[in-house]
Image (cartoon, rainbow, N blue to C red; front, side, top):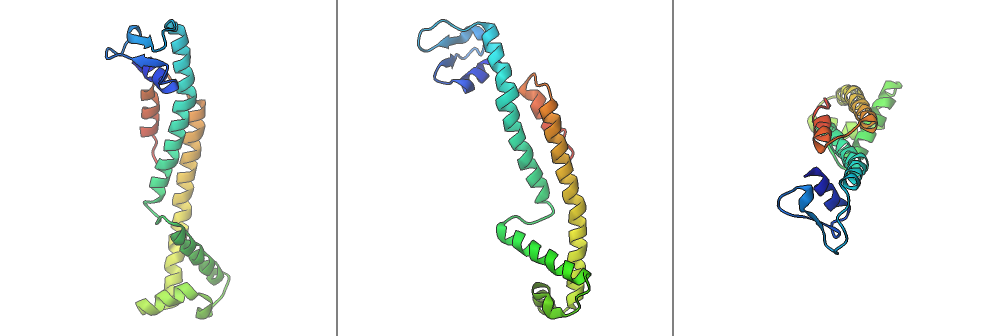
Length: 168
């Protein structure tokens, strides 16, 4: 069945898979002779090692992003807010004490009726935690990509097992 599925993906207009899902049921639509089993196996191997691995690589990026989103909020605007928080925390760490130099932290402190430096301390803690978590996610992603590139794939189940075995 895997060979027929691969051939259908490689050239769906050229190959047709009958309901029995066997090589003998694979027939040519244009009347040409059926390719040899060796040719089909070679096509399957090429598909597994190229297309299926590429699809799995894309899945790895999606899973890494899902893991990131457990800790941060998505969106370009939110990324800009995080950058501003980082900027303000770094200024504070460098010794700045004028609350006006921390516009976002200052506005939040006013709304929450807390000292601006408590906001900066909270952000600093979040940033330090993210550096650890984000680094772990990126390291896991890099290792998964390297393992995938070196992996010998015999079936789609191999790839599914590989992806499900990653501990993000």
